[in-house]
Length: 208
Image (cartoon, rainbow, N blue to C red):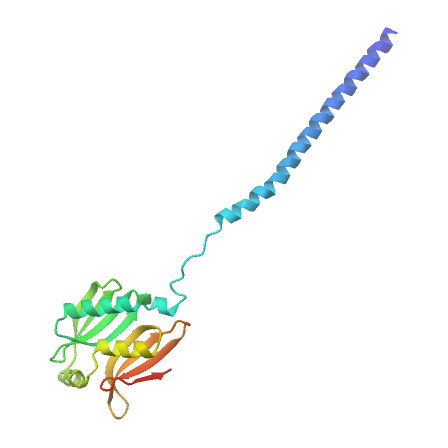
């Protein structure tokens, strides 16, 4: 009888122990399952938090690359202040509009080159362009014959072509030696428009 009771007790202990182990295993499985279920939610948040926001692209818009009218005006003012009594022969946007290369001519036909940043600070020059007497005489003729100044030409082309000027130069063209301001403009739609402004009459002719 005692032997049967001991056997029953052992069986009960085994049963209780098995139940406890099973409960522990279920609890562990539930914990693991919860962890697995929670993980995707945590991963879903990380990309949203780490995704960079939109950034400006300076090279996307030709007009933006080329600088604006304010920086052009500052560049010309700074260049002419550095070489007083000079006349603007050309201006060219460089380095995505961060630098303007300005070419000036003195009354004796001597040409000088400067580089001015978009804030209106001269960063290079003025340096004399080495030319002979023939070229100096030609430049003096251009200065004498031009009735439209750089500022006049800017106003003319700005009223005819909407956009940002990236290049202007005063020179003679065609067989008739027509004296014009040759202009390149970056338009708002991302294209480029060429124009010529007659340096005597102010007539604007679009090309390109």
